[in-house]
Image (cartoon, rainbow, N blue to C red):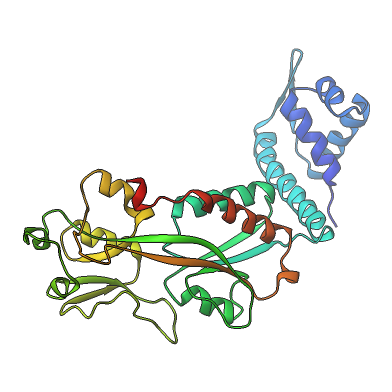
Length: 300
């Protein structure tokens, strides 16, 4: 059985935070005597003096300072418990599991997550970053609640979220730029292509592979971009992920006769719309909003 109640700890904290019993009384609208009695009960229960009086000042003792640090944590946790209880009573989910394909612009994803979290501070978000079939597979296996994927699932709801434009690029010093004419797909096959591995465990795809004689396969889009900037190969990369590198001259568009750019549709997927709570619906709304202004090659 606890010797001290949360209410008594709250009164102790107010006295400590505001520097005296009179000040605490004015802040929480309780009588000075009731606050004084609460603090005395704590001291009597623990056998420790929490405050010392110097002139007109009420100061914490060394023991009081140590206990205050613990009390701050205790009261914060109590507040979180209450928030969770209210969240559950209102039907708001406490956890949101999301799988997002890596071609979706990170800065837009982060903004959508930040805004959702601001609206639901107690929400725990679990983000899985995937490639090609990965997000779809996680949803099919009930490991996430929402997927953003270039692939859809038969017989379940899907909504086109946005279109991601890919551009064929290489480092400006790449040998392909020494060919003094527009390039063909056959020209590319003689050089190393950097391919990002499908993150699905089963039924992996090799979309985007040209059948190049040399191919390096990596697990993340960022690795692919770094390798290409270092002159290790070429690839079609999401324009939204390389705009700055193009502007800085770290990457250069390949002068292809055909297929210089490609477009991929990203879809919102979820198994049962009726089971999505308010936080999930807010996140979907944020994603739709953030996706309205994606860069295209026509803007460059």
